[in-house]
Length: 140
Image (cartoon, rainbow, N blue to C red; front, side):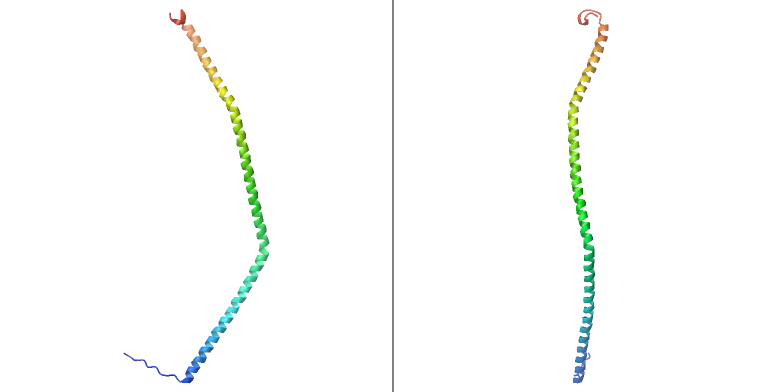
């Protein structure tokens, strides 16, 4: 195994190293400050652009939202009116059907009776010809 020997550095070397470390720290702080000031300037510029855009665009956005609300309200009113009209039409149709249904049923019953009566009369005439005498056709 090898052994590592640590020797004492002279005092001047330690001072040189310490001063170089301080200069490095000051340089890093200066670079960070410069970088930070650049970032702050960019953020201020972006904030100004956002404010300008907000000032310029907000009236149009508000007007568009107002138009959308108006259109939505109009659509709701139209839907309500159409529903009301459809209900009225359905009521009228229901009334007409109920009023015409009773005469139609009576008419169908009457026609059925007339047809049945005509058939009975037709068959009665042909039965009368076939009968040859006597009561109720007992002597044929």
